Image 1 (cartoon, rainbow, N blue to C red):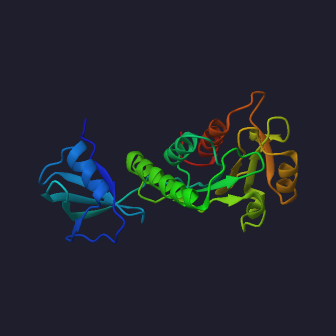
Image 2: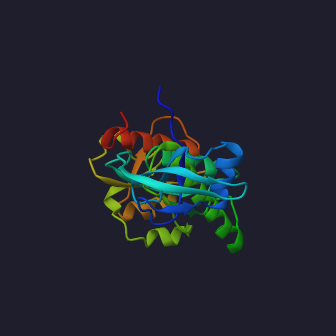
Image 3: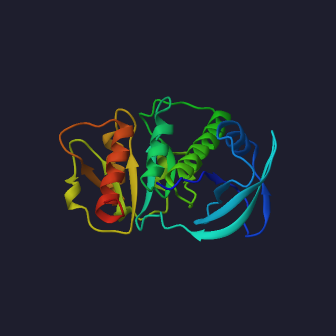
Length: 245
């Protein structure tokens, strides 16, 4: 079995035959954890959808330099675009949802605060959380072989969701007792998936979204946790309209 090369995100324009000094975080991981050596190959990506084969040219305790030797196409992106609008979950559940959603091919993520969202954050803590969630998404891209960066957008409240310029006809909300079966979904190349918090969206919130054209769907007789519902629905969408076989 071929050895899988380490993949590292580097937020800079990458050019063949150019050398780059990696970030402190990437250096610590490669030098301290993975013990990379001089001339060892690895793959860089910067979010432009390409892989950049590189080799380590200099290793020090606090710095690591690499040279890009080849640009390679990366065909890991799904033909289906999915925007996950996920109610903020408690503890590390949000990290888990973001990580797994990226692995399942999500295109972008917007954290959402609704009436029943049990998480309250100050503006400073929210900014730090967003940075953390973006890093979770980047790490998941590294692990899953993706080279297109998944943006974690600025968190929004429900009224801001109602004002978003999105295609509501291709937007989905899940409801345990209301809506059509997933089998009734029409084919589309892009979907917005709105997932409520623990306790679900209120009936008023569901009604407001439905008036905009958002389609309520049910996944069957069992009630799923917020973190489970997002991943089940993403899996279904990728299986029916994307590239999950």
